[in-house]
Image (tube, rainbow, N blue to C red; front, side):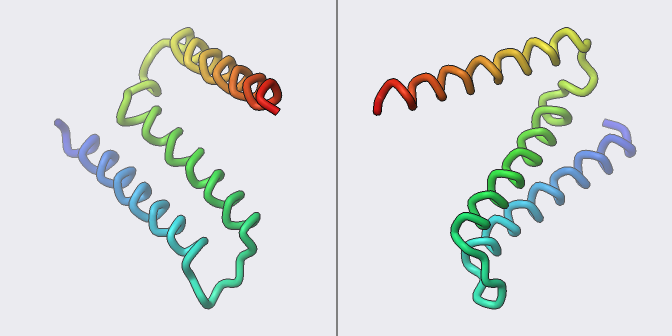
Length: 91
């Protein structure tokens, strides 16, 4: 592993640790007065960023062909569609 890639992976790892800390701060901090909805929305945004970092760098999707990236995006969209359909069919 080259020195540049080690620095990149280390920086991403630190960013993931900071994001995990932010999740804790959103729900547990006494000095910041977030409502439950704001904390959940913030957590979803942070989770999305963390997922994109992990998929792009640790699963090497950033360096793959674009067709594979589009295939992964299609799979995600269809999964979300199935989840939405299941949510409305239950109630």
